[in-house]
Amino acid sequence: MPSVVRLPDGRYVYNDRPATLTPMPPAQVAPPMVVQHIHHAPPDRTVQRIALGSGVGAGAVAAGVYFGPLLVGVLTAMAADLAMLAFLAAVMAWGVVTVVRSVGGSDGKAAAKRLGRKGR
Image (tube, rainbow, N blue to C red):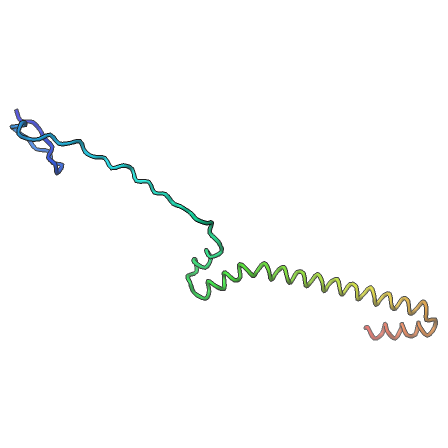
């Protein structure tokens, strides 16, 4: 009775003489492949530069990302300083006019009136 034998190339054939064929070794199974990603450092602001390519536009975006918050902070500080100076100037002008009116008598009142008209 013929038996079924598997050849080394993977085909099955009938064999009348099983004693003449050598038995096949069991198939070697490859070990599973392990893919390991090693990150040396977290990504930084160059992600925007890579996203836009390596042209001038990428540098402009990177500069905007870096200098944008700095510019907003500087402008806010300048506006606060200017508002404080304007408030101090108004208070000092009011104080000078009040002092001139109270100390100067009739001449002081006339001077304060002229000073008030010039401001308008």
